[in-house]
Image (tube, rainbow, N blue to C red; front, top):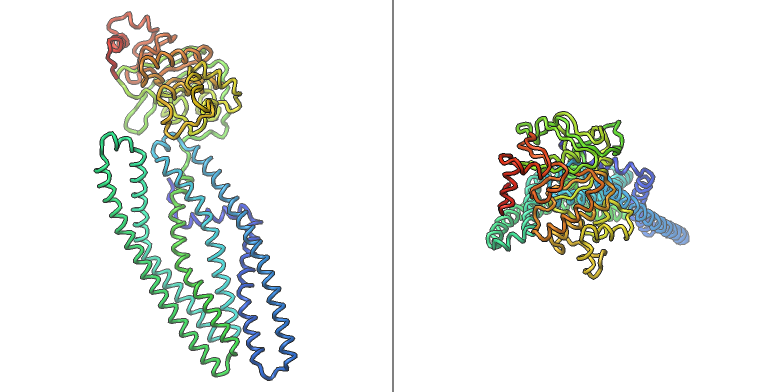
Length: 589
């Protein structure tokens, strides 16, 4: 994973802004115009005061000039109001569009990551990273428009105008800005390590809290609330200590900056009084300076705020961009074509695979499954049963050789077309927090209600769904707490039945069920096997008695292969030994 730096974050934001050049250009013109117009009011007031205090000017001329100035103020006020409405409209359009765009890009890119990526990352953390990135682009635009550009325009305009009025006032004002900015930067740099430590402790606190809430069932079962509360207290104490230090540092920094700002303000007012007294500036210019000082004092205070906000934006964006910059482990080749399933045959040809470089999972494994054949895979003494299914779905790349479907290497076809061709019923049925009809029709979104109900009846789940008040519109709640294990399993079977996939995979689909539930689900499974090529990963041998072929593997080698009736005939075979243990009331891994 490539390391993301601060400059990479700003470059990402800049590229996003340039995807809407028209709105971005209008936005910049609007905010600069609003800034300049807002700073022109003190100039009009200066002119009013200078005219009103000019005793040598005829009264009629004074009234005429003041009237013109008043009309100019009205015109400027209306223009300013109009430009602000344009600014508000454009910034809403730009921010919402960019946030929507980042949502889509993040969704598409993250879901293209490999199975390994999601097993190595906490799902809540991934969601939070996307939320933070979307929020950061909004915060960055607001900060850039309303603080950075506004401050830059203000400081530039006021510096230029004060230099025009009096060179001493101008240079003192510019010096004030430079000194204040340098001190703010130094204080922020010293604050940064403390702030980062506080953010890390806050993240730990958040993760600890999420972990305990997710595992509330375990806390209740083992009555570990006291222990977890003690750990939580320790976590919060660490957060409290470093956060207090960070906040105190902010208070000290604000005190230093306030003292510095007031000192320079007093020096400039003293200089202005001296220049007025000696006749170098008018009373209007003096009032103008005081007005600008009040304006700039509040804006200079935002320099410290800008540094703090930029730190937060960068911190929130770095992890998100690392996730979006991480290369996809499993990618389609440039010349990849759609998988064409015609004969429905599957072949694992001399495959070798390992999760790490140190331990081989498979080494020269060969398995052939013919069209419409129902094959069960049984492991004698090894736990990597589901790995072969993950390889069939191409969740991982092989170390050596190939997996073929209808003599097409699956590494050379598009992943989407491969996975659309395979229906799966996993051991732990995963359902979305959506309606039952949406879950059943997930593999076939255009399915009619009649098709959904027919599939449910074949899977023996229509009987319990029809008892719910909302029938198929019933929501499956978070973590499926409204459905039992066997109910979820039947819904998963109905989903596979409704799929148009030519290949069916059952990954220990009945291993966690009681005998009565297993009998119903076994019947449902038989309803969907008749027209598909099927691979069954078996734990309970009772579920595979009717398979066309049973393959017994010891590690990656095929040691026995035949039908159930034939395999149990030979006394010293592994399969018969497993069968005797299970049929005798014991289940062995």
